[in-house]
Image (cartoon, rainbow, N blue to C red; front, side, top):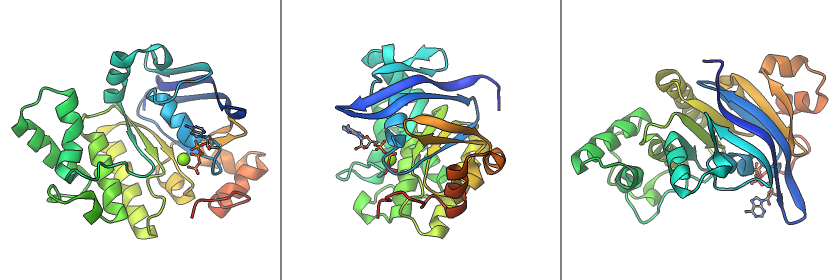
Length: 254
Ligand SMILES: Nc1ncnc2c1ncn2[C@@H]1O[C@H](COP(=O)(O)OP(=O)(O)OP(=O)(O)O)[C@@H](O)[C@H]1O
Ligand SMILES: [Mg+2]
């Protein structure tokens, strides 16, 4: 891991109508680092991730990816950012009318001038990376939840991003499948050295993959540090969140 920040949020504020969701988020994610963002349901974790690639724009504050300020970029600049920083969406967000192959190939066809045979090779390669070889011709409806997450991850990896944003990669999966996804995330960190931000309610995930955690509460990062630091910090609510697996006092999605 380097000491250089790869992604940096500075005083990010975002409201929807009267509802102030982010109220000044500060966070630095270093190159090669994995930061796990924890927080109750509806605290703005997905909203924060979307700011990173310009899917949402802040009311105030700045988001930096390396030396570029995302909020000031136009469509062309954002398109470059999205090649560098790929997001694995909460629900997978596969195109249901396309095969797995077409889903994974989509960004390659849109954003590169690779030939069809190069596209085919890259699709095979990323499906192997997520341990899903040979599923190219399946349709998304034929996939289990765990398989969908892997295909969504393969799609995010296709363009060789330098950073990955994962929105609840293990939510809704049985513990074994969730564990397999966490192992995969950890292996990708090690082999590809991608910078990662992982949003999760899953404390076991955090324990497996986090270099540091960031605790989003009341629109700000109420704590940023290692899990060991969190356990010994005076943060009673965070400590309870960690001990109970995130279920305390929060309405959670079924
Ligand atoms: N496009 C939008 N328009 C209006 N409100 C929004 C929009 N996106 C998010 N919100 C609101 O912002 C708040 C935070 O939403 P967000 O999806 O970031 O929560 P979250 O922390 O990811 O929760 P969960 O853990 O349940 O996924 C919610 O109250 C949500 O209703
Ligand atoms: Mg969310």
